[in-house]
Image 1: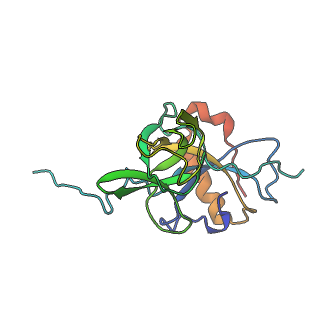
Image 2 (image 1 turned 90 degrees about the vertical axis):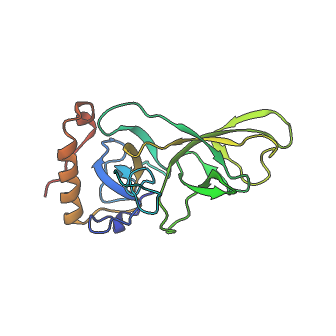
Image 3 (image 1 turned 30 degrees about the vertical axis):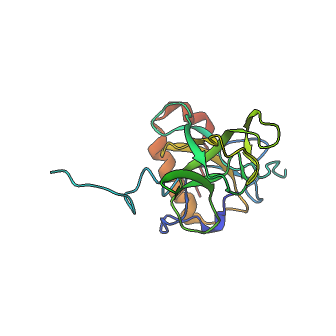
Length: 58
Length: 149
């Protein structure tokens, strides 16, 4: 499950980025756990140069 | 009404910009701990071979994607086996490749259940902003709801 208490844009080290809410009539109580979020991986190994063997263009 | 969701990990629902969910094939580290469908995984170099291990909570490492399933020769029966979970060390005959399939596209969208109540007005504003940027994906519009306070 996603730890919703840590979700904030100011901390890019979090592994998931929330990009939306998923509508589901059986899970629509926002006052309780279980709401579904649409997320993407925030620090994907193929989407960041951090720690990778990168090269400049010459 | 209480929510019916339980923990199910990460379910792929498409790719930002459009396109199907696709998996790529990787090797599983033979002594890796159990990995279940929907679990985030990371890649680790083992003797010059990139191998998949499960992501540990809070280890700060970059993620490769989400586990979809695996293929290996069973250590007991000697039969080629396909499963949606990796049982852990000792499951497979290490004389054969231990393969797994990972949703590894960096722009794959996933559904995940939350563990609590979202009471942060700032977070709701950020989600609204990101959804706005995604509205061009017409196929997603019926699945999105906005929180505007």
